[in-house]
Image 1 (tube, rainbow, N blue to C red):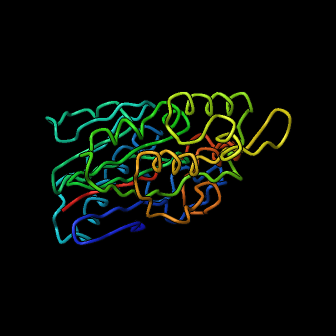
Image 2 (cartoon, helix red, strand yellow):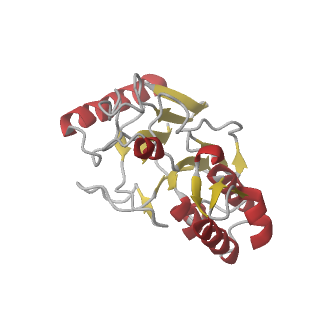
Amino acid sequence: MLNVLYQDSHTLVVQSHAGEFNKFAADDLYGKFNMGLHVGDRADRVLDNRANLLLSLNDLTDNKVEAVHWLNQIHSDIVINADDKPQAIPRAGDALISGQKGQALAIMTADCVPIAVFGGGQVACIHAGWQGLAKGIIKNTLANFAKDAPIQAVIGACISQVNYEIDRPLAQNIVRQVAEADLVELGQDELYQAVIQDTTPDKCLIDIVKLTKLQLAKLGVSVLTCDVPCSYAAPNLYSYRAQTHAKKSATGRMATVIVQF
């Protein structure tokens, strides 16, 4: 239950999906391929899914993947080097980076933007919700890459603007933080017009995919992704917002994984 987002002779990017799944049914919380240990699913089932993910990665790379690294994601700007001494408990942060072959980097999402980045002999995987985008998680991650190497990025499925309504004061705060931190080329007013669509005096729609692409462009990163599937709309993708609207007690998580081999 994987979608290959990118593959060449030495880099692979995949994103898992839920498989057979009724995302708006109260009695179907986790579908067939949940990657999240923190969402109330049975641990043995999730660990089996993660083991099968590793098997699938090796099928796609002729058995060149040694391990999959995971994070305790906290909506931060923290980048973890997966090449450091491994720990039994996943470290807290929202991006993983590695310069070694065979080390797969995984982040989990259910609406946030998953970004796989590669170039100059390094790979990274980034979890970018609105908080991470406002705090500079993309910039912090790319600061670990060689300055003269061409860098490319692939964006996985996440929530689309039409399905992502937030309060206008929150949108204004996100735009202000991004502009003040100089994370994009646009000024605050221009950025608001680019990524926010007002719907009522109190509500608006935010385009976190475009916000992601603007931040990557500021850093000179080439984005290979054109159309990004919507995690809310697609029937086989996990969505925290869909879970909330369906009044479900929980939902699973997708994994986006990058590995160089």
